[in-house]
Image (tube, rainbow, N blue to C red; front, side):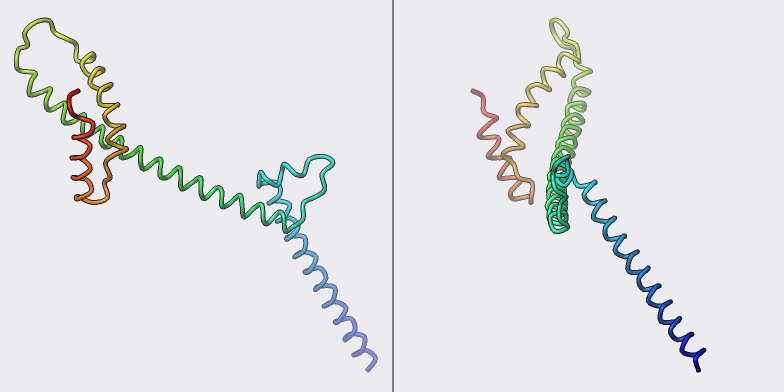
Length: 163
């Protein structure tokens, strides 16, 4: 009977010890997680310089949330800018194709007077169209056909009339 008591007591001690070890591992993992957050999140790094008290876990979590929110906002802004630039590139490619077609159509016709290089013509043309595209991009909305067509007519009337 005494042997059963010893094995039962030993079994309880083993379970307690195993539980304590598991609990310590869990605490260590949580502490490592907070330490990692503090070292990764820039707003947590500035406060941990020499002489500053260690940040609380609540502050580390709050600053991490703020930083992640900031990064999401930045990503959204960059994606919007990228989409705007893609549209601009597409518009420029379409314009280039159209003017290449016009140039090919006129290439067979002899021009009177002195010839101007294609590069010089393109430079002048590009400078003019760069300014026009800025006004077009700020005026015309491309959500649907109605807003596109009314925006184009408004833009043509406002910015494309001879002065």
